[in-house]
Image (tube, rainbow, N blue to C red):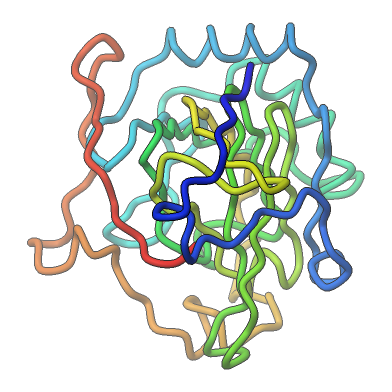
Length: 270
């Protein structure tokens, strides 16, 4: 996809953190890995066509699809869904598996995939995936346009932790394991561009394929009690949109041809 570059408009980029192209030593030691060209251009085209032929859930601020299992926002656990991951997804997960889960992980029934669509201006609040819902290791494959992701150690674990901003180019795969999965928050600031290499890159449509494993039975063994919302001391908070609702509203399905969910989530910082 051709990236649209502009001279950085000072009134827009004031306070925006430049995105780094390389994973620094701190992130590497904590379990962050960025695989470039994880898919080919032809495979990217085929995957996007497969996604666009699927059924979208429009109940969030962005459109999503779930395969194998879906995250239940009211309980912060995973529940089965009828649609298994398509063969093209499982083949991709199998290729990436050694980088994230090793020789035996991420196989068959324990694989879960969530498809997220981000239009320019859309983002997601900094968060840690629920420990009770998913095991160690997650992979986010970027299709379409690139964007910057925000990574920061949980402030309950390390007060004043620095914010890292990493550029996710098209067709790359971001891998989070160990502390990067269990302790770091990850999020995407809601804006229409990112500062990369001193240039303001306008965002386009980004589709993320996020692969996770279901956790093994029993108590969470993450080893990070300050960040653990399953068996540790971290609070189990519902997303803002669900607080105060009776039992927490569950996502509703919608056909891909219906109106795109395009509400915006304003997230401060960069």
